[in-house]
Image 1 (tube, helix red, strand yellow):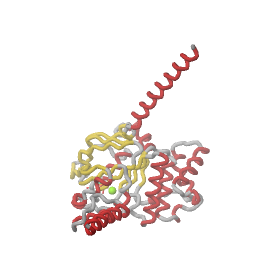
Image 2: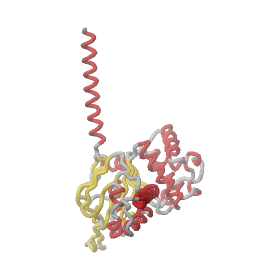
Image 3: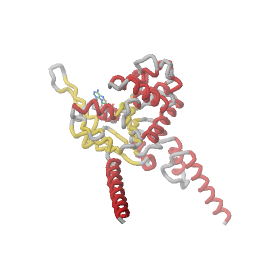
Image 4: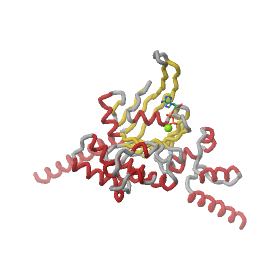
Length: 322
Ligand SMILES: Nc1ncnc2c1ncn2[C@@H]1O[C@H](COP(=O)(O)OP(=O)(O)O)[C@@H](O)[C@H]1O
Ligand SMILES: [Mg+2]
C-alpha cells in the first residue's frame, strides 16, 4: 500500500515535472532569436569640422520578430536597407532609434557584442573576401581557434561542420581553387564551427552560378532542419525563398510585406511595384490567370501549376461531355 502510494506520488511528481518541463520548453521555443523594435538607422555624413552634411535613413521604424529555428528570407530592391538590417544583427552598427535583441541580448550593450557575434554568424556576398587560410580545414578552424576553443574540440568541430556542408572531402584543398558555391559552403562551415544559433547570410548566392546557388541553399535548409539553426537569408533570387517559413519584404527602409511565401507571391502586382520579381512559374501562372484561366494565385512550383492546369482541363472535359 505504502509502495503503491509512493509510486503514485512519484508518478504525479514525474508527470507534474514533465508538464512544467514541457511548459518551460514551449516558452523557450516561443522565444524570438531576433527582435527589432521600432528600429531606425540613419547614416550620417559629416564634414571635416563635424557638421552634418547629409542624413540617409536606411531603416525606418522596423519591427521584426524572428522565431528560433525558422528559415527566414528578407527581400527588397537595392538600397532598401537589408544589409543595414543584417549589420544590426551582428552588432556591427547600433540603432539610431529603437532596439535590436539577438537571443535576448540587447545589441546596444557592448559587453554583449562578442556573444552576439557567436550567436549570429554572418556570411557575406563575396566568398573571396572571406578566405584567409590556404587549407580548407584551417579556414574552418580559424573562427573556433580565435575564440579559444580547445585544440581537440576545434578539429571535431571542423570535421562535423565540413561534413554538414558536404565539403569534408575537400578538407585539404586550397580554398581559393574551389568553385564559388564550394567557397561559400566552406565559409558557412566556418560559421557553423562556431556553433551559432543563427546564421545571417547577406546575398550569399549573388556571385554564384545556378549550381552553386542550389548547393548553398540546400546546405542552409539541411542546417536548419537537422541542426535547428535559424537561417536569415537575404536574397534577390525568388526561387530561393519559396521554402522559407516566413518572408519579409523591405522597401526604402520600411518593412512593407510579411508572410508565408505563398501569401507574398500571391501579390504579383504589388511585388512588381516594389521592383521585385516573382518565381518564373508564379509569373507564368499569373499571366495565364490574366488571360482568363481560372488558376489559383500563389503558384510556387511547376508541379503545382501542372496540377492546376490538369484540374482546369478536367473541368473542361466534364463540361464538354455534358
Ligand atoms: N556606409 C554607408 N554610408 C551612407 N549610406 C549608406 C551606407 N551604406 C548604405 N547606405 C545607404 O543606406 C540605404 C540602405 O542600404 P543597404 O542597407 O545597403 O540596402 P540593401 O542591402 O537593401 O541594398 C541606401 O540608401 C544606401 O545608399
Ligand atoms: Mg545589401
